[in-house]
Image 1 (tube, rainbow, N blue to C red):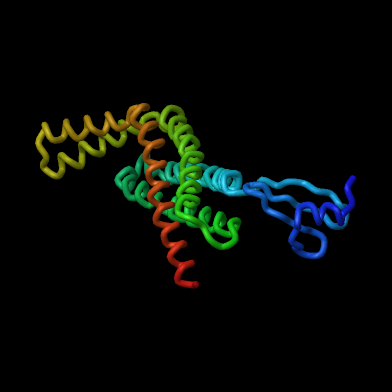
Image 2: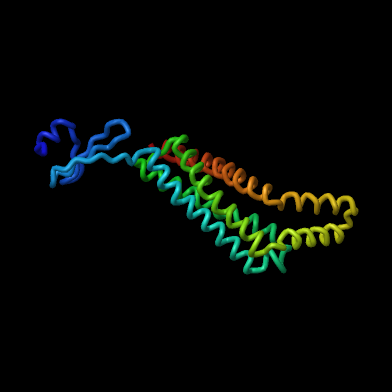
Length: 219
């Protein structure tokens, strides 16, 4: 094994603390433990760091969305209180509005207090791509096993509401038909995957822009 002094000279380490010395070479961070003389490489940089942080928050996003749906169902908003279904579906936007800023703030801390637009966009994209299949799979199970009559319940409510509002038979039929078309498996899966990804890109773009702006103001 090479001596500690030879390793320090060979790689031109910068001292960090009393026992750890580091040197960056491209995407590789060489770390030398001054206490043991052991040298190892750490690739915890942009891509891997983004993946790890984003995957964690993507999973949490998916879990939060499933918990929200289950809670809404237990509260009866998709069964006998369906008149509030649209409202609670709209309120669900709170979940990504909380998750994406937290994920991007965590990524910025990992990057030393600053984040580029590309790094932020990548983080948000991975969060969305990880969360989307979780939410889509749960909704598929919900629609088929937990509440298989959900679309019929919504259609009946839509029909009653439009009738009370004085809509014509043609208008009622067209609205109910659109509801059924949007409730098919293919429409729900595509809507969930594409919608979550687009939402993730939009939110990560906005949040990253704000983070970059605040960093510039501080400087």
